[in-house]
Length: 175
Image 1: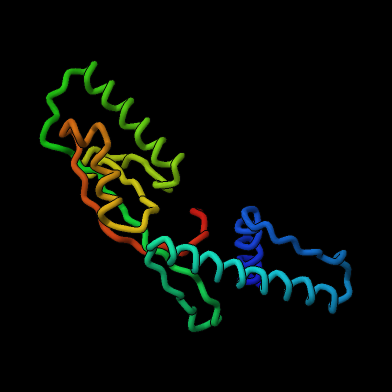
Image 2: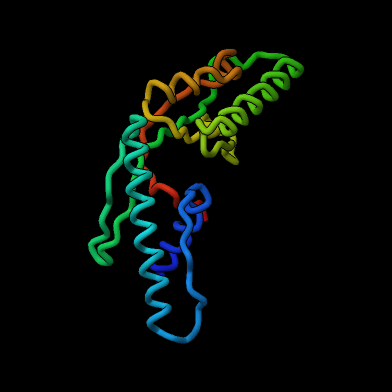
């Protein structure tokens, strides 16, 4: 039942972008009707995931299907890139310059999110060398590295970037 709920949630998230409409019979206690609705949802979910997978592969993304050994359910895994923003060697900017760079840094990250290049960004809550992360949703390491290094804080030397490939389940939200 949990897996069916996850499929229904994924379907509803993916269905927002999908033009395909499904007529759903009115739900009642008739088990046959309920089974038909669930079968339709699962079929459309599989078609949508297949379409998404084909689209991602066509755009150059690395993907693979993960099959859970216990449930036999398939999850589409996609390669993302995590950029670790680390303390850079040039930290002697005065307060006004540091504040300007911070504002430009936040604007850059917001732009990456708005353009669909980054899915999540944020600082760490401690004062160590790794200051924050950005997860880039782009097809190549070269592209992620280029976008991360375009950050004004990186250009000024206040931060340096370390990028790593990372696999995540496509469409699963943070909890």
